[in-house]
Length: 277
Image (cartoon, rainbow, N blue to C red; front, top):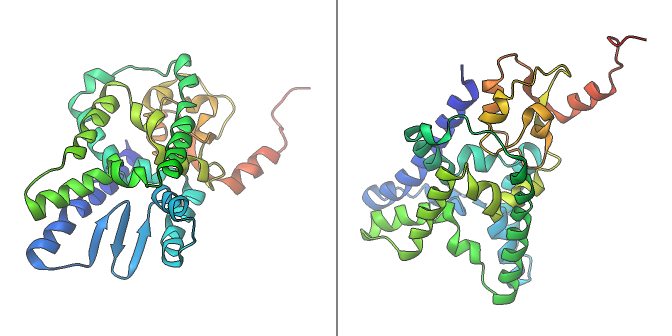
């Protein structure tokens, strides 16, 4: 049973529904309780700002701004605790990619992670560094304007309020095509927000771990990983894992689980009693 998959799709659907319903409620019923999208979203008096957009603003203005720092607290704490879960559980790009994958299963069936793709992972950090460097050089928060997840929320708002779409919204199309044909290519290698969240979550408190050493190496969990990782080899503990739970759903022997970092340390310290002298 794909327990985590179903839970994740429920959260993704609800998150996308917020992006769709918020402008409709604002436009037709003047209900402004929820405003904005996931770059900067207000729920009543609570404002939440994406860590990358917040960092860009600080780099451009070079001045700490109290309300901005306050709006960064929740997403930063979430990333420190749970890692890159925004990418796997909330991001509208992930939601649309999941829908496209469901309609194109034959393009994905049986694809296993390849060793040569592992070198390409470092591109994620290069993209983040270049994006922040350009932000400082140009004095403009690039990702605020060109973020694919943000563009989806912005285009939905433009469609509801002004019955039109913007040219920059077309950026979403190649992103989804890359994700569909390259197994989450954009999310794995090109998303600077994902890179920053991965760094923040490098010591996250909840991780995916093989709870037994005698893994049968069927590699079903590896093929199920949308990020091309090898949970069977312990890569669920790596910075690249986004805690989606797909590998746990596909492990037929129950050896993969979400585990607290404190429990992981206890397991590492537990003496081995089943070895032969």
